[in-house]
Image (cartoon, rainbow, N blue to C red):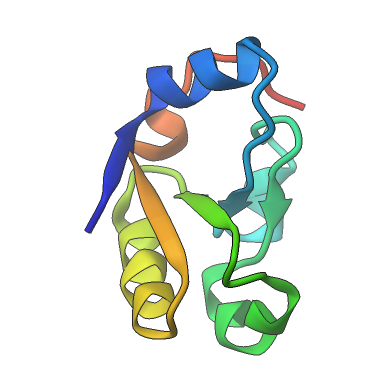
Amino acid sequence: MKTILANKVNRRLVTGESLNIIDVREVAEVRNGKIPSSMNIPLGLLEFRMNELDKKKDYIIVCQSGGRSSQAVSFLEYQGFNVTNMDGGMNSWEGNVE
């Protein structure tokens, strides 16, 4: 499983890079703040909404602490997606939130 540190994701966003970030937390958790431009697909709905994703794109998966996102990464890798888990999840995020 590929991983990336939260501060590296933030640096890439700050420099203007366009990233495909999927937040697999529940809707109520996301209301407390999410990474700008990230898409919310709760882990329990991922199987049913993966048709919204493009296998030609790279995705960074995030949750609160890294556990659910690692499950999502394993599932999506098995389905043929190029995904990376953000270590530490939102608990490690120091960048802007919306």
